[in-house]
Length: 471
Image 1 (cartoon, rainbow, N blue to C red):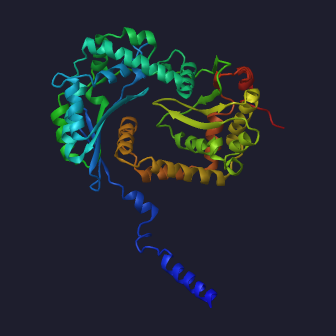
Image 2: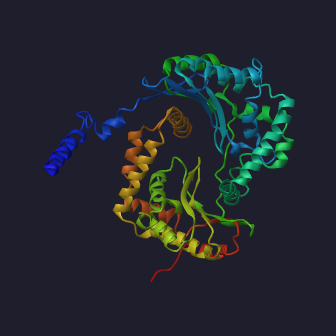
Image 3: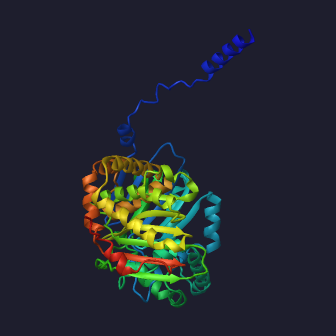
């Protein structure tokens, strides 16, 4: 009797707790969902200044910012670091606001004001309530066009940047990638670091900053981006009011395509607990038709960390081998693109110093496999991973604004999620193998090692292994 009663209770509970599929769950297909993303509107002012927005009425907050086609690549050896220095100085007071007034105004809005510099772009952006978009645009305009760049503030900021450089030096991944750029792009400004050398940080003058502003902070190199609770027409009016007086550049600086140089850097520190290694070949630019197949190749090789604990079942053959032989703590495949070139490679961190040559061997073996023997199943998985990662990266108004700003500077337009989905979906296994043969197989390689790297393979051996002879 008790058993029957319990069985009835279990059945009743299962009936009550079994989830019911919502009638609206499958209301929209995947294609319809991507196609329903708010349209990106772009307007160009008479002076060449562009305004790009993705308005979403469901958001109460917004991100607005100015994306500038200028970074450390546009510097000379003597002024390397000026773009980053200028980014710091933008928040130290303007002709209409002191530094304290600027900080208080942002705090009273409940907003967030930030900036960052990369090798090819500089960005200033603000996050605030939709009702404060007009204030945010006015502040951005003020710090970009009205910064005082006082000598006292510059002297104080030198110490701040030098301390920032010390922190960067503690991040070995950043150190390795700085060495990688400097070695692969020797005698090119693309090889410069973003912060610049210590000597430059100490010697840059106010006139250096003013010269950089005059040359690169021009209307034709800027995009005002808004995402979230914004109205395109209103943002265009704000742009006309605050940026309409900017002048386009008289002569645009010509940047020549850098030559990728097969080379090696070893920063040997035997007392360091881990070895950091990067191997790279020359990749492709943002606008190359081979960008998407190479992106799929990156996803096929993948990334792995031993703390994840599932390497024996990982789809990446390299991850399974690295875990099986305990060759590394972690690795990641990178595909870094610029206006006219790029870097494709693998970055590893390991405590297994005695088998660094084996680690390099298996990385190159996986690169060869990309050029010779990958399956449609691998490509299918990699494409799905890419699609998921790209969509997840658009969670929030700031990531959306960053994508719009970068794409407008690079492509002159915004690629919709559905367009990107199509570009990825069109990639085939044959295309991946084709681009791997063109850009990876038997190509010059740049290698960087940091830490206890005595066991790292000789560069000549690494280069010869880029074109193995198979029977």
